[in-house]
Amino acid sequence: MISKQELKDRVIRIIAATRFPFVDQTDWGEGYVTITNDGGRRVRGINGLDGYIFPSIVITKENTDIQEIGEVELEDGVTEANVANWKLMSETAGMGRATKKFFLYVPEGTEEKAERLLENNGIAYAGLRSWAVKGGSLVITPIKTPDSPKDHR
Image (tube, rainbow, N blue to C red; front, side, top):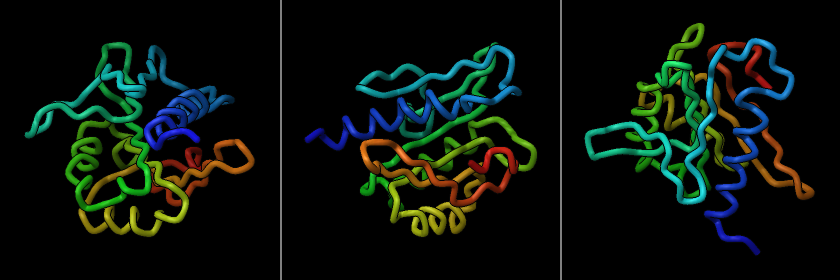
């Protein structure tokens, strides 16, 4: 059996590799770079009031400005305690069509709680997704996509 941290690290790497960009995406930004903070590596952080935080997935433009952020949570991470970090990630992400390019990935079964936390705390986000391991594969389910319909997959 693998540890919770190893599971989270694997989920981060798979999401980064298959969704940032999507495998068949043709409009991925010129010069975008996908960075993961997993396996204990802290590659790209965000400076907050209490020091640096390191989102699971950070997408930078060619000039190194942050364009998109994807945060992967385990079940015990879908709590009020993470709201300030999610808000900082959202505020730091670039703009999409209508909202910030912040994507939150939560374990299946915690979607409603995550959506309530995002909405009740005024956190702008481009996508809320659930994840689960089924039959040895990672399954991502789109829950809500306030920004762009093409991202709802």
